[in-house]
Image (cartoon, rainbow, N blue to C red; front, top):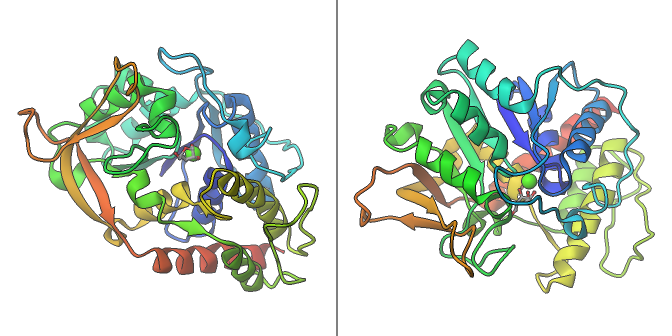
Amino acid sequence: MIVDVDTGIDDSLALLYLLAHPRAEILSIASTAGNVPVDQVAANNLAWLDLCKAGDIEVTLGAQTPLLAPLMTTEDTHGPQGIGYAELPVSQRKLSNRNATNAWVELVRERPGQITGLVTGPLTNLAMAIRIEPALPRLLQRLVVMGGAFHHPGNTTPTSEWNIAVDPEAAAEVFAAFAGLPADRLPIVCPLDITETMEMRPDHIARLAERAGSSPAEVIADHHAPTTRSAASNPVIRHFSDAVRFYMEFHRDHDQGFLAHMHDPFAAAVALDPSIVTCRVATVDVELAGTLTRGTTVADWRGMWGREPNAAIATTTDPVRFFDDLIDRVGGMAERLY
Ligand code: RIB
Ligand code: CA
């Protein structure tokens, strides 16, 4: 897999899940500017690899800014460093000598038809890679994208989702590049419609800590002061709990409840097993010029535009099964590591 992230709290759990999963072979982690600036994204990626005692997995630095739009970040959602209240030790690992775009291009050329790409951030670096290697969509085995919103409100503007809204031009170029692939090779798109049903609640964190054999019981509560920090004996649980509590407070403060939408770990689970979703094929494009709607994904489900389909949009899944698997995998890894 090539994993392209804007780490971020939910990106962090996606990385933990992939590091914990026996079927995931991470060839490269691309850092893309989004939730926080790209240098911070890269530092977060390196630090999570340290915490998980991961092997020598390549982490690349991506573009500082989107293709055209000025960089937009969201520290109010993910915290000043993008990992909520967590404070991870600074890693001594070195970033790759090649940048994210070149890693995409070189890896798909080296391993044609073998790599699944997972993007849980803006599509800037993937779009730049496709500009260099137009055959990239056919050289990938599959692409999974967390992004967009179709029959669902946006989380960045009333109609746009963050990963697309940060770099709409990149998203438009990526979707266009995948037009005409066979239905089973089209990008699987995980939009807010489905990812906002992945509601992580305090009970999930308690179960995660228990699965990891961490003590004491991990309790995240709505009334806890912002200065509260986890006392979990297991470092993976402790740091992720501190990260996700910031995200739960953000959702609470935006009237969504004391919970956290686990967009990116869900997309990671789809990348490892597409059978956990049902999809509908469509032609997706991105509004670029709308004064109110720039960054909005539009799906033509019925061929009104007369254009080839370019996406398989995930429409249904089983959230309970997803969380059971996530908790078992990440909790099990945490227990093995510490
Ligand atoms: O809209 C949700 C997406 O935007 C997630 O990937 C989150 O991490 C942010 O990147
Ligand atoms: Ca993300």
